[in-house]
Length: 93
Image (cartoon, rainbow, N blue to C red):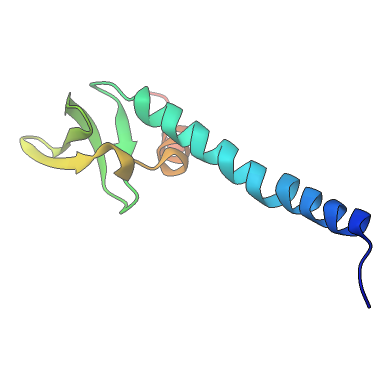
């Protein structure tokens, strides 16, 4: 049994709008979030490390995880979802 060409086009259209397009939008949002990171922001990495940005370089960040303890991470290691969730969870002081 062969599917009509219109049915094939419809299936690819559904695949695009429900799978490919949302993934592209998520990647675009993550890139924008990564570009807007600045010194002093509190972030969470994809590995679960919480810290404050002490310095920024080209594609790396120096993250202060404790007073005086700094680690160098790639900007792509910062999780947009975890950072936003942690920011919303913190009580306002």
